[in-house]
Amino acid sequence: MLRVGQKVVCVDASGTGGVWCLKLNATYTVARSNEMFGTPMVDLLEAAHSNNEYGAFYASRFRPLIQRSTETGMAILRKVADDASKRKNLVSLSHSDDRVQDGDSGTGA
Image (cartoon, one colour):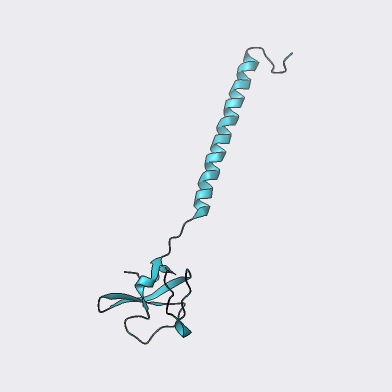
């Protein structure tokens, strides 16, 4: 059952019109969740509410919104790239130190 305050996406807007017009793929917030004769019903903050004590819409018209944080994923990728770059620089520096210790200035002369 959907819970109050949950963000949902409309997956079935068929047969809704007038003041209760739903939009397919639109995001709504559950204002009230109930059952009518065993059928889950919801009212939405963004849609007109019914005077019906059970709710204005069948809950089956909605699915929970899945929020994906691309910012978190990008932050992880940036850190991995930075770490790889630092390791590459350290390896490069350690090889230059080896050449200097061997008497090679790295100039090719």
